[in-house]
Amino acid sequence: MSLQATAKALVEPGKGILAADESHPTMEKRLARVGLSSSERVRRDYREVLMTAPGLSEHVSGVILFDETIRQSRSTGRPFAQGLLRAGIIPGIKVDAGTTPLPRFPAEVVTQGLDGLSARLTEYAALGARFAKWRAVIRIGDGRPTAGCVEANAHALARYAAAAQECGLVPVVEPEVLMDGSHSLERCSLVTSAVLHAVHDHLVRQRVDLTGILIKPNMVLPGTESGQDVGDDEIAAATVRVLRDTVPASVPGLVFLSGGQTPVEATARLDALNRTGAQPWELSFSFGRALQAPVLEAWAAHPEDRASAHAALLHRARMNGAARRGRWSRSLEPSTAG
Image 1 (cartoon, one colour):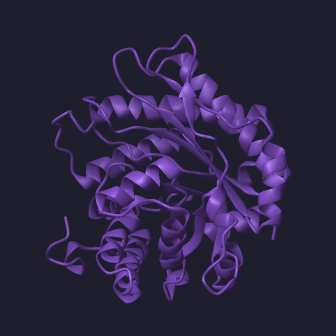
Image 2 (cartoon, helix red, strand yellow):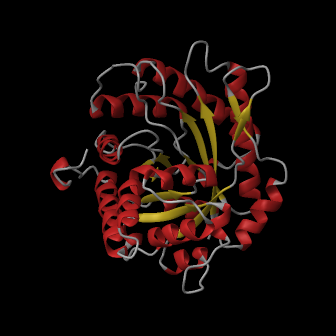
């Protein structure tokens, strides 16, 4: 399958991506919150629950795996990537090595992992991966982000994207402007616009084929400590204004991240985005916690009862599938949903 065909398949109408690529420290924190210790076996068992939900492919087009997971097999002995492909779901892989402090730029970070990247991408492709993901982290604060931080991360994202395409993998390019802080919706809009402009410029310089990539942006949101009360439609309108100014129509789709939002908040805002009218790209999702949080709680409470965990995942997948078409409503959610 070509890069373009894979990218389009990942943003097929009504579908999106399940991000299950948490690092060991992140998984340890999430498992601890539900009373479980993190071990290779526990992580494998949990991710097997995620990837064996019957009918998951109806609304999930791809799953982003972690290095450990793409090397693991289900309890049946079939490697996870093979199992996903047999189920009609495209396997992906997180390839960045996390963030590190950016020298001379206090409180700012740059994502590492370019060293040896091509060899790792080649190995991941042999293990079954068809797309990859790299995340950059941009913080809004007093004097932040600096131009130096934005440029460093945009350059790394573009070099990664070029390497991924060279190895036959669709790059998912994730420049995340964090919602942590006291900034306004307007400030987030300005920063997100500047970041996406820089990313586009560097993608072009690195000769990345924009028809064979996906962008994983943040939604334009006020900071969690801003006290600003903004409705879903206003968030969607602000987000689309930024995207129309920064993302070329040649990009097949945008797969929004859910960072910091509740499952229902993320779905409601995805729905609002898809009700803004015709756009030049598909507006999809690549959610981690917003898909997984109810699943992990159900599984931790009764690990032997996979049916309940599967039901929780399939419900959230259906809700986001409806939001992809602008057909979600709160009446579809349980009365206890936040």
